[in-house]
Length: 445
Image (tube, rainbow, N blue to C red; front, side):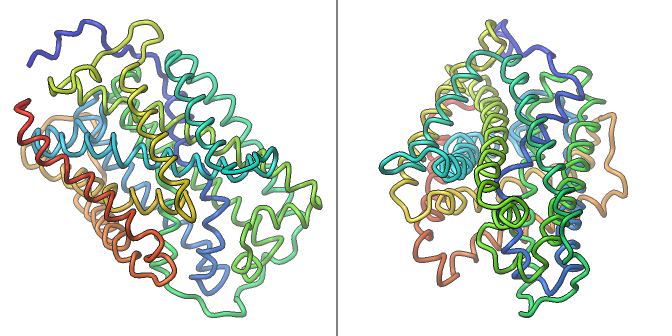
């Protein structure tokens, strides 16, 4: 198959600053407003609570360093798809691209869209199915924006993320100044499992890997991707620690543990009920930045997929106007809207989508992390090498394996399993549909 058959290709329109903005936007999302209460319930006090968030940043940094080496060796649009293709061959790459298009990325976008729907409904609710309707509106609107072009999407991302980061910093500093509970060290209830806490911490840090999908559109990608990945993770780690210190300062560890909506409770203490509306607006901006960045990067995998496998060639067409993979963006948007509709039929659309995506996501995350060892053995050249090799890659692979186990084992939870166990099974089944699709399509790369 001739990769050069399509003369219209991605252009290098993104700088390092653009990449850091997009990376931070992919990480910062709804979970910083949802996860802290669960993390507090699984830790014994302030020190272990904050250590969990710091550890999450360190694990993500290990992953970013591994991905920086992979991106330096293969600076091309497609991210993990390219790494898996070069490391394990077309069969694994095909299965990943299929899974990302139908489960991983579309499910993640739908999950975050449901969070947007929940908070948007607090401001302007619809008569029925309000959360799902707002989720669908967000997906459709941002899909159309990305169809308009790379530069338009990048500009909105900068505006939304600047507002989000500014709001979070001001919120946290105000909370620290007004609060008086930060020095409380213990909770009235013993902590649960620190490992369980890390599940939600790492979910909150999820998204930094998406920066690898920008490599084909970043100026001097072999050098720039390292700066983008590392700087993006460090910025978010500092911000997450600041936000959680603000939570603790106002509510204390025990108050964070008991809260069902920790940021809202903090705002009520600081500014009364009017603060709840301000918080809803901040969360909506946060979620929109995540959705926009996920739509932007998600279609890049489908583009690379279609470029390499003739049966999906329509996905591999790059539209010169706007410099965007238009067909891939449209298909991704349609699948996501279908998942939003399916999620609306469950007790909680967000949790249903997390259950649907998590086992498949961590399966391929682990497979991607292992490619760094394959490239080292094969002596594939690259301008960046992961420091402290093989310790850093081994630690990251161990974290991926643990998260894969946890994402499946979590179904046994008596409260979670009966409601969302079918979603886990459905995600795995859809992934496995890619096996016969690859074998019988007759379209080997």
